[in-house]
Image (cartoon, rainbow, N blue to C red; front, side):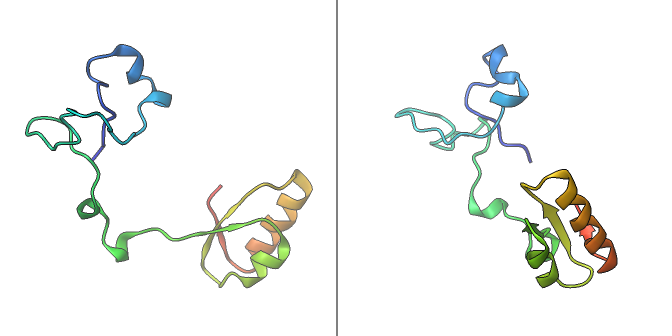
Length: 101
């Protein structure tokens, strides 16, 4: 289910991808915040995915962190340069770790 920001249907400029993100409605008479029938849904804890279907991954920034990750896990390599990224990719391939980016 996609949760729409307030008034995205009314204003063309809010249809742009950058402005389409969810924002908590805070207005006094806001229909989405009041859960009025026929208006877009608001995210609540009931919309959460079952624990088995969630995707878990770790963010890795250096070789020490990638050594701590278990075999067959998935990681994201973040905030590193080209040389360090190549080293991390080689180490991940060696340990059969999936890289998501």
